[in-house]
Length: 423
Image (cartoon, rainbow, N blue to C red; front, side, top):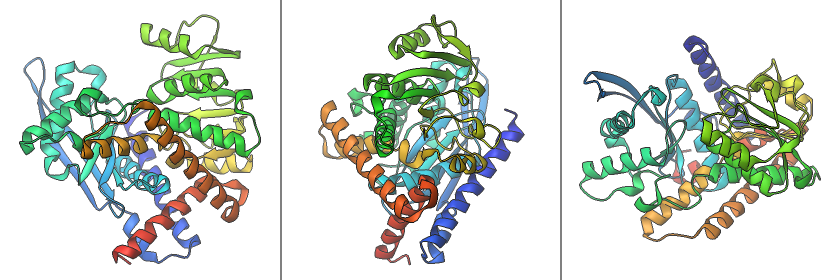
């Protein structure tokens, strides 16, 4: 995608998010001040990050951090390394984080960060220098009680470990709680890596249950074979689902009889792509959305289901594993088709939920086992889905769960604003 087109879409995404917030405030008959608080970040920071490259040259990268709203607690949200990251994209993502935290009832506000770079073209040492440089540049706005980053696109547990170590050097005391999504030996939480996917699976299960569809009978198509899409395929297969299609940025695989997700992901790990997996036909990302399936999970990047392709969606349920995968035009068409859409701020909130568990464990100096983490995540996701589904049924036409989720989250935020004396 050309940079100009990416920037335009990011601007449109930010505008669409503001419109949804404004409409929710109006439908709830809340004070206009609620919208004024939520329409812009409390703070947006842009920094220059000078980095010595392996060839001895110096490159200066641009870093962003959007701190949207902290009425519920410290800012919380991932940091992505991406060559097309933009201020508007980061601001929109931070808004969604505020809403996610309100939906699942964790005491965080929304934040998001990015570095404009292409980590795929960097050595490990160059990535480390960028990671540490980001923390040095942003050090005064980050902290376990202030703003707690996490992994996102093209960042991982290793990046978080470097960032935690750099913050510890700056603070001159252990500061592992400044980030979540860390490796286990330095304060990470079991289950964090697959938490977004596991939460997405719980949301898919509850959506199927709401439509009286046995999950084990569902045929699944997934866009994205990374941390979210890949783990979702594995977990849904464990639930008895049939994985009929999965794609990544280079294309994908389709077999109407189903594929072994374990074998598919092992092939991708071994070869670096899905291409060439035996026993499946090659498909494009565009073709994925037109496949006959019960549940479609867009788990890649923003703006994938649009006004141009939404009419071709045959799935009964769409579960947004990615942030912002459906445009407003796509949303409208899916509503007209009576597709049950589980919105991103609900469907992919498993990551921030387990990040909260990690933060709690860091603060108190103990660690839960995997069974405890997964059960507490399930409880949070099931409660959030059922509350939002019930609220939507009572307040929104056509089971429009995006509107219902926004309204439910904003109602919670408004209550907190009232009690804190903001309104």
